[in-house]
Image (tube, rainbow, N blue to C red; front, side):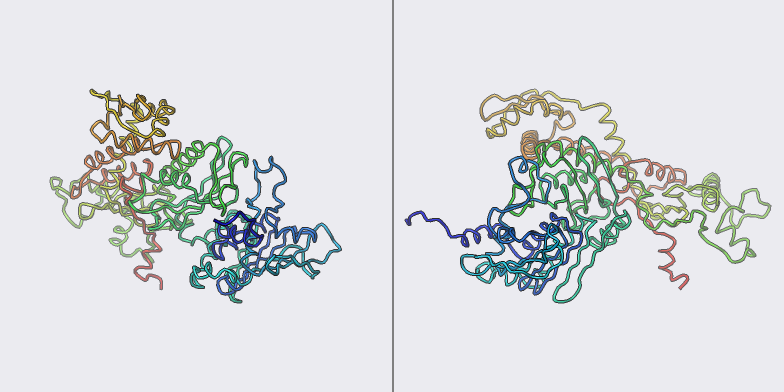
Length: 606
């Protein structure tokens, strides 16, 4: 065994670089955050060979004075805190005090800066050379702000360099970092150039419309068209941003951006809360898309717990989890069919069909239906048998009344319109002022029945079923401690238990609706959730699954013929029911085609 030695400064920095500098994207993230903390509102990023040969970040921030340039490349040197009080309430994008030192230890780094505090100073340049990382400072002409050049990344650590991916892959990761940081600061202009080719130039976005345009540039226009803007403030917390409609889901969790006080994070507590909010409306195996911003007091969140600053730690994790879940759950429940009609026209007086001539009265009657009446003197084109299954007199009158409402300029038509037919005993065809709606009647009725059953269960409160023979379960000491501490919380979920030893609990009562389920596994899952997230939705999830099955069996089945009034009643119920856009399994209950989209299908007007 060798004797204990003090590591050289360079080797210590290279070890620290193993945590901070994983690839060129890690360097880009650190430098961009430093520029934003310096107050820059214009940042330029220039890359060569995916950032491995050159990664340059130039900003117009406050700059660095001459005496601090060399110090900035030292370990544990930062301008973001000065004492313990600053550490407990971090208002910046975070720090480790090792980023620049670590980057300079595995690359050829040069930093040019001009501080706004000295008007006569034209700027200075510092670069690190030699094994001992001696900083060399020299004068240079530079505008206000800072430029950091990182060349030949990992040139002196070939073991790290061989783990880098292709140039295209490394550039894609930097591009993703730039786009995600651009979403955190709408007031800043970002320019990205790769191999002398301009990739992005994101101008400052001040108005809500400009912000939506930036979101569309980063996440795609389809996301903005299929998302809902939310803004909720409660208990000192504010959540705002865009969440996708459940019908706009993805096969991977690749379009999920979450920011805490302007810092992008990936946190399992946040992911769980969002997933829980979408649980009742998302198809199995799909992932929601969102760009969300959480604002809270910096003193109740620790943003400096991870070397790469990807994770945060909330002082009251249960409060944050419940706030995120309840805000998103309510926002998704309040989405109406009108919100989902992206092709809705802005002209309320537009006619569905405009005939150039009124000479053909029969054609006009067929299109507008208003001149056609059962009291007309002219005989109808066909005889109606009032005793036939689908052609009763009342049915025809209902259909004519509906078509008259659709053709009337003064009549206000509901978002899902009025039913005009049923096809194959499965789908309802409905028409509104702007287009065509196709409804899966079983899926729609299933959601309506399910929501009514959930409401009935909530109003009657949770009924508990005492176990004839109390169930004893062996658990870990941590789970037993949790069960004892959270006894009242678990009782609200319908579980009555008590601790009988250091590693055993006894269950005495469970929710009556779940008495036939696997009680031991359910309780273990609930305790695991409470330990991990501070709360659990397992009971609600099991209960909802049972209600969903019951609703499925209680809904109208395929091949059942509905009358026009029955179909319209279903449409009105859908408009009044929460989450009616999806069935209990996450499938869409209706689709919409605007008149413009239908015209394109048939090449009308082209």
